[in-house]
Length: 287
Image (cartoon, rainbow, N blue to C red; front, side, top):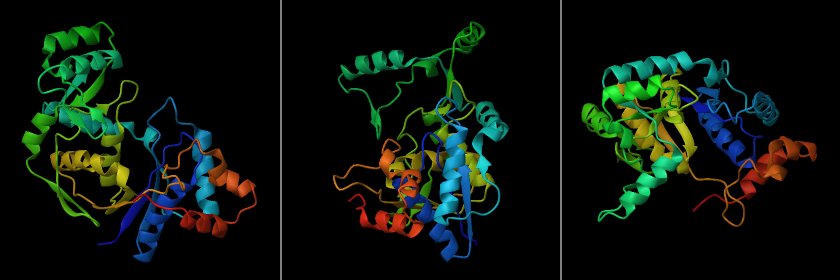
């Protein structure tokens, strides 16, 4: 089987050293195996993503010599793909509209925290308490008709029941049994966008034939969610290689706010691609 990897940045800022490190990992794995390296633009956050950042990122990748195969897939051009999957999940009774605001959720979590068992937690903090899961169809229809904004959430317990057991394989940790309830009833379509990161990345990896997902170890919890969706939708699961994160000497991860360590800033400072990669290799990775 041919190796197909991908690099999928969000154009909310300029490409920085940490992102360049991740892109090179994916590019190297594909090139070493004689496979394909794809670039995908994850621009579903319509409020924060900018086309100028996308253009700059692609220019930086070319300058670094990280060439890709085929056309760049821009997620905002493929909302229909995600809509079809949402319709399927809806038809199976696996998603529901959530009308809660952040303040509503915070109040529910605070109330649950005072209970004997406390509020359930996931990798990112307290889980959504499932408030809107219990609304009747009549109440849901009334709120929609009244113009109340809503996102769509996956009913994790029902999804886990339909999917059954599943697992995925990480190159470092080996076989990992899926935890379908790890993130609770997560958002599968945002209020302003007919998809979410979790849905879009799962559908895209399937449609693009990605066989090896290389990404930072901070996204390992998300793989449990993606594995659940893959099992529900009948998708083949790719292999995973969750790599360590590039950090500064203090152990802090690089981010788009590190303006002096963006690829664009380093280019303007006169660095060559070889010098940029040497700089990347000189930085520590997370322990």
